Image (tube, one colour):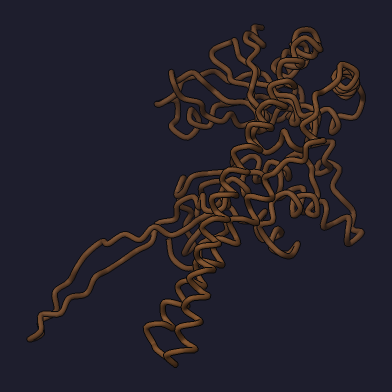
Length: 375
């Protein structure tokens, strides 16, 4: 991949050839290229995933900046959320290279965000908005967009794309459905799953949530698990902070000794070089400490969840699912349901307990509820 890599990726250098020159010295030219791979240093890749997750849940740039700290200005996030590379596809030289790198979001989720960007821009400029582009209109057609996966191929999960057969006067009504992207891309060769009615699936999922999942007895164990997990995670982060702080103390001691040597012996290029290396180590360790300290969860946020809190949360989700505000229902589902995995005419809901923003960082365990769809 040429040029400067986008946020979330780092270069993996690969030697592709060595050409021998026809010279007396027998010099050679080594040809190196770079491959873009996820950058897990300081959890950058994970923070990019969180940024997209929050954006798809409707979070604003300010909230995303506070949670991820990927860029220093809102402008960085504007570029970030319109870069197609996060779908795995790479546009270069007038061509699109599909599945070029690992993806963070589906193509459908990316396109939905671009539509929302246009809507927000139009509102800022006070331009008229096409009703079909309003968030509620989009949400009303595909309530589970980006959450449905196909498991027809054993051991694999493929995203299911939401699509529509348009209405044709006098012949048919509009039909919304979910279709396996692998089935579509391979023309039924790799996956031969059937299309699933969007209306039937969404009704089945809401019915399962209302009647079988949204009960305090189901959510109590998840809430307890969250408190235990966050407490254990804090202990682990504190141990890592102590280790990094110890390394930082040693590096700073080394810097002090090198400065003393420079004062006594005068300028020395070798000592200056060693000092520069130690100062670079110091900067990296400080950056690690900052990121580790950001992971610490305040004790108040780990407090056990009361029965009243659980009941209030259940009531809130139920009201969102049964109300008239489709966008509110969609947001409630996205905060609660991790994914819906379909196999033939049955499926499984994977859900968690979004008590607060803490549950969005991927720490919460997922609980399964099977057979959500059997028309």
